[in-house]
Image 1 (cartoon, rainbow, N blue to C red):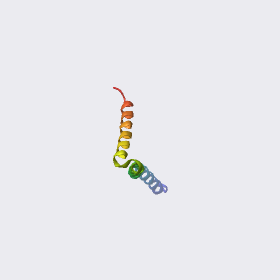
Image 2: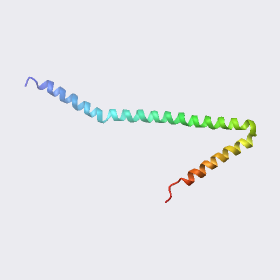
Image 3: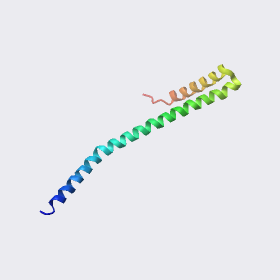
Image 4: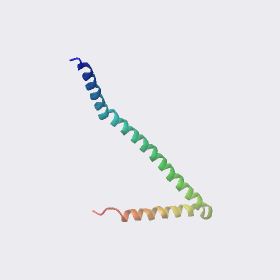
Length: 90
């Protein structure tokens, strides 16, 4: 019976650690992954926007405005046709 207080304290500590692992640690990891996903998505979107802006600027020099828009529209239309062809058939 002399050992009872230390066993009880150990049991309570183990129970608290298991409860924390099942709740707080999982929530913390979910919040961390969501935050990193939002940051990565923002950087990816900015990279795509800057890439398109750079392509437009490079095409605008020899082709002027309408030619650059025409080439970009053609590229997007070609990409849309390729994606439409690869869609799952029902």
